Image (cartoon, rainbow, N blue to C red; front, top):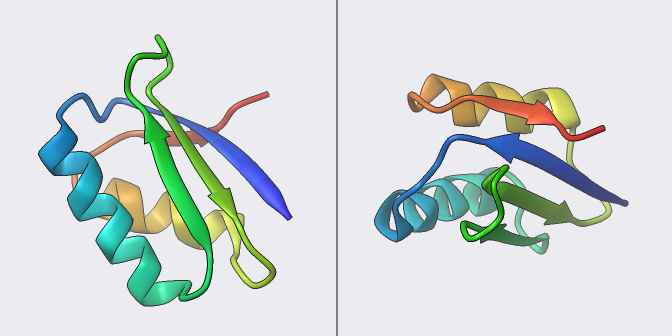
Length: 69
């Protein structure tokens, strides 16, 4: 499963923190940001992750996060 999210993460250091947090909850997933994209894309690829949990974890850390349609 692959899901793409729109965020407001702009700094590489924050992106790394979010990735580390998500990997704690979804080990084995491939997670990355495209901070050059206007939507500050967060891409999560894996077998066992919940979209709602990704959104919750990111927003609990002070960033916006929504599924990119």
